[in-house]
Length: 98
Image (cartoon, rainbow, N blue to C red):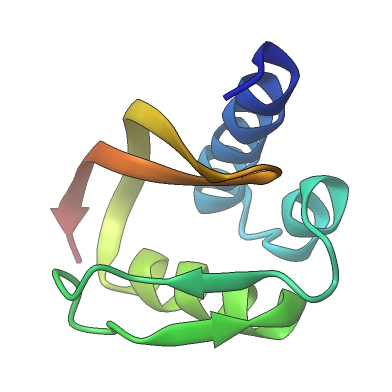
């Protein structure tokens, strides 16, 4: 994964963590994601599945944030899947239940 792509993904996680604090989920999504973005979760979340576009990502992050008083994610490793496509291979996620 190129360093430029790593920086983009890191910025996206910074934006998501900021959104968990402020409730503004659309701004960080629009700043770093293509309108046709697709999030496929690993099956470890209650809201597992496929989320498409800005609305899908906003739904996923809002649903997670609603379950906790405090929420944040820390990426551990990024892996390039195909040229121009990357995935997060592991992360730490913490929260305090609402």
